Length: 424
Ligand code: GDP
Ligand code: IMO
Ligand code: MG
Image 1 (cartoon, rainbow, N blue to C red):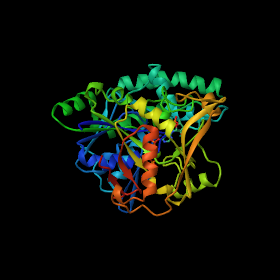
Image 2: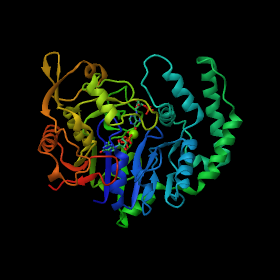
Image 3: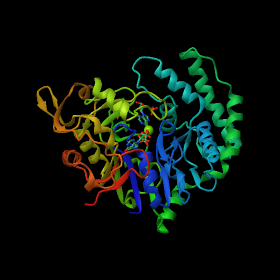
Image 4: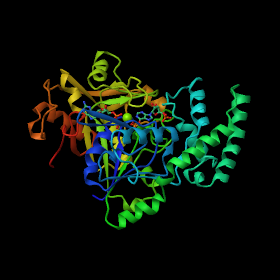
């Protein structure tokens, strides 16, 4: 396949980083299309662990070129720190990373406004990276883009104009100190010097690459249920992680997308607030968190854990147009005597026909469970589907049928080798 979209199919942290790293061996270009440094994509190579926030996970394969599309919001500090960290580890970034001139910049006031809105009532439980406020400015047509860095005069004017409004808001509404305009201008001029060499006309670059027969892997951040339109609004992020977002966030048209791979965790996790029907607040949930090391790769927050929700994944497969999936973290379920799978929801005595994304209805559903026996043996060094215990294969067949997905890849540990393809 030449142009593939890879999407998180639940509430994020499905193991996208690991699978992008694995698949990128066979792609020329890996491109991020939305989100920002709220993402934390973990790649483990040997005994070294990398957590990527803005740079595509393909950067760890030396023959891969990485691109940050226009749909991504870029925090200069986070980007420069990430480049520095990679280069310290002898991973060459210059000449291998390109950034869209149309991507928007996260400004210091975006992070501040994110934290102010999270300090009030109705918290979303954001990552605090300024994501929401930056997308607000983008859609209000007040945003500052990468391309603005190229013209010092325009940059200064835009920062001054924005600061006038933001300082007013900070002072008059939130009773906070004003931000120093000159300091911010200085900071962003410095940033321009550091990233000038990475700026590219990304739609032209990617479409030319496709014409030349190159292959592109589009790396989604977050997950489908965190999508601002299709997710569990308002407990979502402010971008479009679903596969449709890949076109908007890069300039690759829908007619050039060949396939969509969904990354599906063998159970469910969620960070931040919002409804989570299969959440486990008992010792089973604790066990999933402990064995699965379910702590945020960006914020370190404990992730909420629960059983696999086939009803949710079926919805996700539909809105993303998923062709095949990678099941990750299957090894984490090995210690359980019994494993539950949610096959549908009951609401007010009725079995629901379609997945309810609105927070109110979703918080009131009762999951319908099927219980399967656990396999109680270590599968983390299995090398193929056929050597998995019978009960593990039964679990996989059951979730595939219930969620309406085709399992193509199975991941049984964080390392590259702990993965195999399913022949079918
Ligand atoms: P992402 O945001 O989707 O890239 O996922 P994260 O990196 O935030 O979280 C996934 C975590 O699970 C990371 O710590 C990975 O190293 C780890 N991981 C990925 N696949 C597997 C797997 O199959 N088994 C286990 N035990 N850990 C995995
Ligand atoms: P990756 O790419 C899991 C969640 C936050 C919060 C909501 C909104 O690593 O899977 P935001 O800071 O985006 O405004 O927060 O979205 N969230 C994630 N949860 N994985 C992520 O990224 C996430 N990025 C944002 O916890 O609930
Ligand atoms: Mg993550």
